[in-house]
Length: 320
Image 1 (cartoon, rainbow, N blue to C red):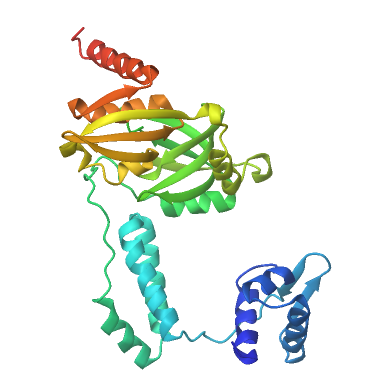
Image 2 (cartoon, rainbow, N blue to C red):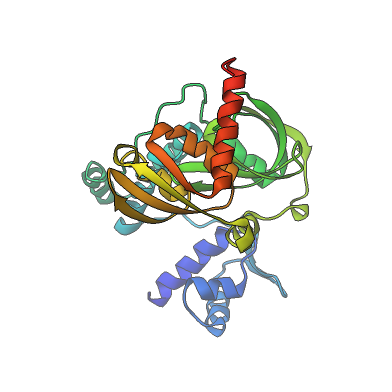
């Protein structure tokens, strides 16, 4: 990157955040701190109103804006790819917002870049595994959840777990969202359970953002929560071995990885699968969805949990 392009990129980066540390600029553009100081000084001498706070970072004085930014073909293609991905992996609210943003971006593209995108658009596709349509869940809450996270607002959820059809109303303090196995998850402090909980966004029946706020400093960050999940002590992990019929295994190509698959070996009419599991009760729920297509080899505790769930269902339906 030549110096003119680098100065422009630094200016765009400064405008993207309220405060930017010199070390952050150095890391982003693979340059030394000395070069950062020199480039920022060059921008200031060119008339860009850049302020500095000792020990904090640089900032652009309010009221200053760059002229409309021009995108390169590569940047425009990356944005188009992002739009395709959002169509498949965003909910209704995010798709609408991203489409609106892309229309604004297309509006500032040069004519030849618009032609480039039009020629490329039909040649890019993002596919995702087919999932049963859940008509009972509107799946349109990512945008208001993002706003609640940024503004530190308490959210009231009407939520249904995967295993239980009954809804529960929860007041939660949202700390972050992440995408895993094609599903968006909300991590929040649940006031009902007095603990952190993982809520699947596509299982939210309805939600309301409350006027009440909370203090982010009193809760884990999303990164801290995810790191804590990764670093669970060994005694909280369970080694599970099951035999799964071949026809059932064919429908579990993605979900088995989500449940902690370690190894898979062919056996007669199926596979022997080994999993590393954090919660046996949750895993027992998944085993029940496999019906007679799976046999639990170990541990005994898992078999007992499945039997308990079956007995509870029989009692619930008056079959005991």
